[in-house]
Image (tube, rainbow, N blue to C red; front, side, top):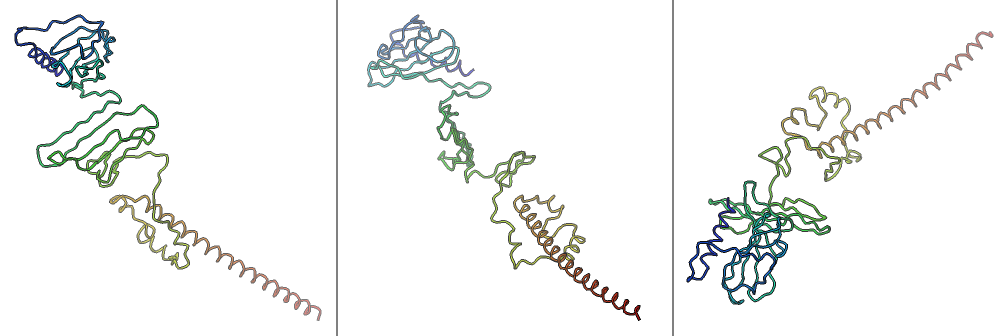
Length: 319
């Protein structure tokens, strides 16, 4: 395990830091369980102690822990003292200047295992992977999901890098907080679900379920109602349908099977056909009214003629 290798390396460094005049095969574990000594307590020494975890405010689990202190300096000119705490919850690390009375906060040492790397909430995690060839590679950074409501920010980001490691273009970003958005930047290319070769910004090989779909269009087919629009005569529509087995300006079944269907364009075409049907209905209604008027006029003429015939008939009978 990598944890064992890390501990062995730390102990080796600690042992080599003991005064040259001393020869030792192991470190003595001091029982200082009830003490939380300040950085200034340690000076030019390496020490391993048995500690009660709550006394030193170490994160993790379990009541007790082991703590390794490496204090190479006697004053602040040499920089930090270092402490590692080992408990059932993992390995934790903190530092402090030799002249200070307080340590800096504990930080967890991230250790890889069979399932990967686990990070705690609100802790920053950054990683990068660079290929050995000349192709661009990816890096990502994350601050996990914020538990504080009302804060908006970038929680996860993918970026391209060139083979020299220089940052390139951001490809994708996930935001936390009220915005809660996932963004594929203009440099991010296409997204495929169920397909390895997406040809569109979102290419799904399967069924999409949604409560509502909004399609942006440049304009609707209201041009059909413009006075200059030329409506195809119905006898020509009839001939077109008999010949092609589909409406004019509407793709055939074979074309849709081969090329798919543009939803916005098809909705507009169907609206165009509905509006054309409305114009046909209006024309038929006008023709119907004209025909009804002609029939009414002919009926009146017939009734008038019938009255005259009846009058002539009566006059003839009287003679």
